[in-house]
Image (tube, rainbow, N blue to C red; front, side, top):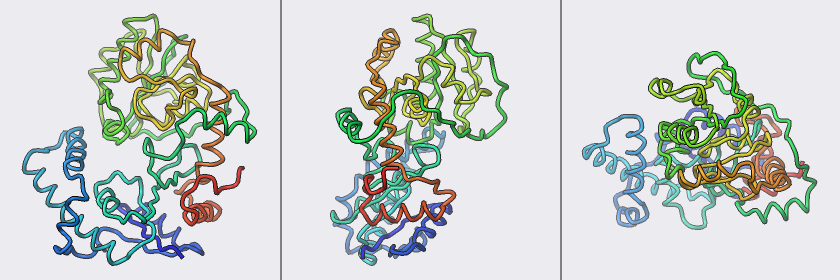
Length: 378
């Protein structure tokens, strides 16, 4: 029987992983950083070349830069020393436990990246994250978000549509409202014809790692300003409900055709808009679910030709907005994409609830190697 090593970096991960390990048929151990063995210097020369130290340092410094924290030479030196010690502890952990599979949450934290980089090639990996669709959980053997294993080839979904019953047309989905960190403005009266541009959290990995040419929400706001200046469109933004960032300067630049609608529900904004422009956020996927045209600006796993449009520059974005609604979006292909996510890829049930049926399905997928095809076609 395969031995699973669950690596937890937070309380909620520990609780969920503990519930999984209590299920019949799953053999393994839960480890938190404080339980890792002490480093062994004898493996130093084998560990150092396995790690992309510069990339990890830059990634962490970029995160601190966004948060306005110090990331100078002293910090970088101390960070390298900390990661070296942790890498040696990871090597000692792997040698002690010899797992057949390692399970992490998200996988982007530097401790996870160190552990994963040192695994033997035969060791399987699994990544958990919040579900892509309401009422689901993500479990993927490759990664999460842009790094996940969801096929990106339109031909895959055209073939898939021939094997399953796919209905094209509007998906009557009720989105789950996100609770804001602070009180927001009251709802506004929306323009008759507008583009909806949802903000994301500058600190999130979706922006820091997977948005190559739009670095933050102020740059995204500027792109909306260009659309308004160079066309007859109105643009409506909504700040991310969990973001700590404040934008009083951007609010001052608003006018009758450039608006914030923080008090309006996201679902109302999607449904009332003519199209949605998103970097790579969940709102972009939700807009596809609500049968709305979507233009992405960042690296998104749903960047599938025929499902959404994509722009790699401001010029491409403006050109696509100018061509709207003459976009080559295929309703049947969109339906196949959403059917695949719903019935094959996403694990039914929220990890927060950890209902018995959900836990059993997760265990089945772990034992089957994380294949999205193991679940029944519901």
